[in-house]
Length: 389
Ligand code: PMP
Image (cartoon, rainbow, N blue to C red; front, side, top):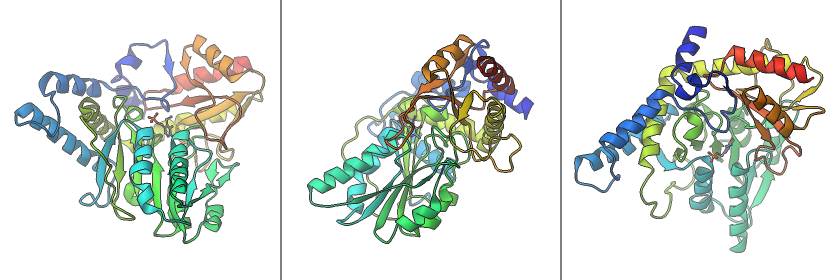
């Protein structure tokens, strides 16, 4: 895969232009390939206009761009029923999850219903659901919130415990595809098995879209919400894909004004780029880099690796971790470690990562990888971490 990766890496001007630096923060935002930069430039210099409003070619082309990008999102997500589903553009995952909560969830829920909230996941996938619970309670509609059960040793949801806490009143499950701190693939297909055929599953795919194949058909979920900027498009772009097969029809309410047409143009180009590169190969590459990093770190007593402990060895039969590795030095503060690593050219995230109330209490360093990262970067990082041990 080396040749394939070298060619792709060269397509990222910010990466190719800074060989002395190492960008290891793609879970925060991904870098953009030349094709995305060119698509933005081409759109703004040839067809920029408002969408859905004009009678002249630039406006019509912009309208078509928005519609075609909806179709691209459906194809990219392996939509099992694109005639029925809907794609709503948002400014990112936070905005998308909030839109599902505000404009759709209250219609689903009745007094005495239950919903599952993933309390150790990203705040963006917790706060909107609790807000709906509070808002409905003010109207006399009481919803029980069941905290998503976790299995600490594997960094996964506890699907067996989920099966035993849910029942016929459990109408809605919020889940995350890849955990933004622990990096685990959360085995979403098991959620459907645990909760039965009728409950609605809303997936926060912020850390999976663009990093691995995401198949709506295979996962059997009802909403997939993601951020464009983490999938190589511009900040301020993102989407909610709604299957429209369970519960009320998703029709985001209100007048939403002018869409982010430049962001949508960038998203179309990013999805095309990712599809051509192959999300399956991107996944294999980043999983191999992450496994190399955990394999090196597990030999250093000074570090504690968060999340799944069963697949730290690079040759483990099943790698549950995707391209995210989060760790702490047992003696050095994580904030300080972030500064030290930058003095060696490594850009990582070091804080407590916007986790919910059941998340980590102390900070940690998160290394998140993408297709432009290399084996040499991981080895260099390991040698700096070893020197700090
Ligand atoms: N969910 C997860 C799992 C995330 O990692 C993030 C971003 N860190 C978000 C939601 C929020 O994404 P955005 O800031 O693009 O809205």
